[in-house]
Length: 140
Ligand code: SF4
Image (cartoon, rainbow, N blue to C red; front, top):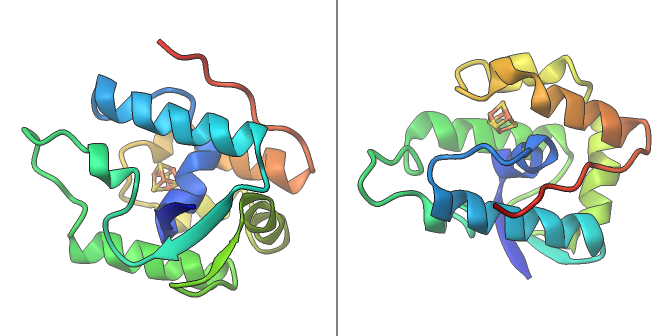
């Protein structure tokens, strides 16, 4: 079981190896690759810091507890038709993405995110919406 907060359900669609530190990326790559290759992995939708936040660099100012980040989580959980505390497979979450999210929604849902301008998350939403496969992310 992997615990993920709301916005990370979408961040994982756009993850292409970029992140806050080598340790953060190593952990995120592990999670991403598990979900990509084992889409029946169970996910628990959690409130606040999750299994990805756990590797946020200790020497950087963390945003994991920021009110705005909780707001983004709540908006994305609602957009996906989910609730905090739900346990469901990653493939079911991707099914909800395909039903409920359009690539253009990312610029609204994630307007202040530093990764949004790269376009990778909108691209991930597009891939999932078309029933395609997310690309592998090689380990560094
Ligand atoms: S734009 Fe930022 S918050 Fe939104 S899905 Fe991408 S990485 Fe996550």
